[in-house]
Image (tube, rainbow, N blue to C red; front, side, top):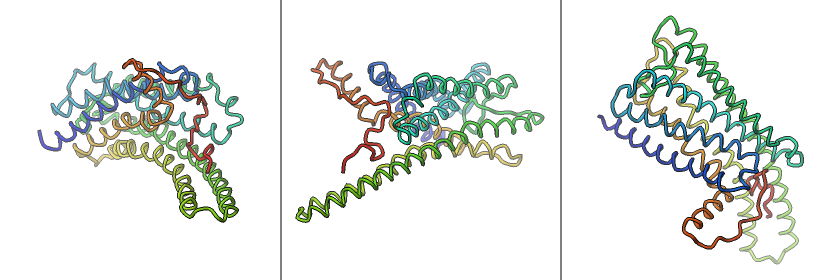
Length: 339
């Protein structure tokens, strides 16, 4: 094995470990906490973590073996099953992120009508649609026998060797990525930019109130005045930073692989072995980062984890916070934060 193979294998092993642990923690929190189960976004988060967990347990080890052995690790039947699962789970995860952005958009832009616009049964319907949508393409590919082991990606995935099938496969691949990656990206950009617009409006309003207060309190100590101004800057940057993480992580992790798969369709293009595997590992890394981006770094999930640890260690449990809002704005976009 070359050094590049060893580094890619180590990176994928790290991604596998982090993804397995973090997604399990999200599901454990959901099972443990009644408050989390009552919240509408919990449906999307559970679906996302479930897809990521299956991808971690079934597909990542297969790709890791492909890197280590330099060849197809399993038989053709198992390979087709793994390719089917990866195509379905990846598309489903993308649509789950789009559903989470829609939920956030409704919660922030239409807070007064959120309860009527985003009910629990609406979330179930959205998750059901993501499953149907995500299953349609791999089922068609399975029927057409378009799942094979691809050496440039060291994994079982959508792949065709027969030249007679190239044209149909090209059309299929373009439609698949347009209806999964591009559709999800457009939804993410539209919804989160709308959320950012509302966030900036509220931050600006809070800043005006703060400046008016500072003008009235002419004798305020300079250090206090400076802290207020500094907090204004942090408040303005917080919303932009979070939106950038939501959209940026999606693009950085998925775009290189999607672009590579589209470029691969050109008749004269051959994908470099190490670049193909690196782009595949990058898509897997999204499964490891999603729990932190959407769940584990939030205060409510941290409190649930702390309660679980206290119960395991048989410590005295303190009363949990009264915070239980399905809108989940929790200081997110300066909507509930005082200056």
